[in-house]
Image (cartoon, rainbow, N blue to C red; front, side):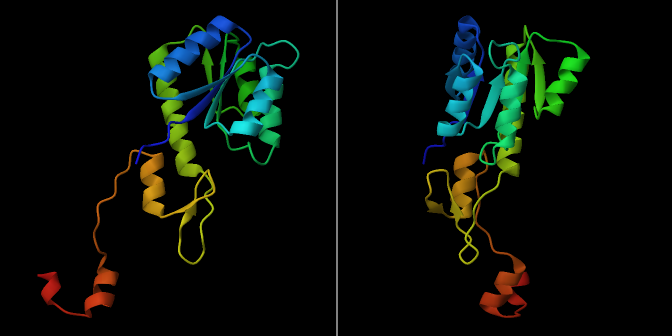
Length: 184
């Protein structure tokens, strides 16, 4: 079963920046969405629920801080990690980015390898911290498309984890009784 590629939304009013980010991300195994302003970004988030957002701060009409604030106020999008990617380097700007809900702050010009490492880290954290609907009886998990899957299948599709089968001591005792022969 193929692993779903994480979807990253890149938001920047500069088309050359978007083009560069799009190529960098797609070449490194990510699905990419692009927006050139805050309203396009908000519309994209509502329709597509990206796994991570790279957000420029200095944009006309609605700056990145306001976009971030709006995303974080929405129940359905507030868990999306936002990395500010901007030329603003002042400590006040960086603190404001974190105060508005950003999880990271990368200054332009950026090192591609560093940016990719930060993206990978925040996507892995999101997977680990994500809220997953789980059936209280059978323990299946509802995926992004609304289908119910076994926990192990879901985790294998959304991470680097591969499960190996085994049996715990409690289940072994429940299946075979309290016998010493299986402990030898």
